[in-house]
Image: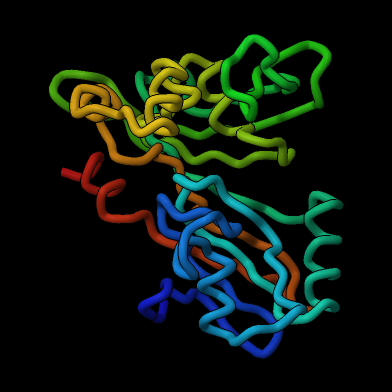
Length: 240
């Protein structure tokens, strides 16, 4: 991995840029400056181009692998694989509690949470879109006598907030998740600038502990795997 001031670079050629998106960075522009979104930083790095296209997106607090095509042909070819579910995506997550099984599958449809104060929030609902997530326990551990687990998560579908909702549904919400963790009021407190030190202590970690670890797909006639290590705050929570 090559480290640049704008972002760590996992892979780069004339058609594709693969980077590590830091936690707490949005993918698309907001009202901030040119450094406030991943795509804006990519434009600074590559120069202004109308063909620059982000292939996959991550939530603001989710870190990890993001692909950015620099030409329409590459963008079209990669998106076609995503739509056909030919791309293998692996995430790592730190969750509350110890799952009883070492490996399991969560099959639960997802749709809008109409009872929530948060417009973007979804939930498990019978009339939602089919959603499947495979989970493998990599490690069970304790912090201050509280049980936590490090999970390898492989989504088989690509719904909004799928991993976060499915793990909450399974009884193992992601550590630090302000929307699908302890209470959505943590998320509202963040949005309205009311997040206190007491809130931060309850959340334990500064960002939700979900990391896009790797993406495997076909590129230029070869099977390629692009990988990114977890950030220091994530690793230090579960490493001795």
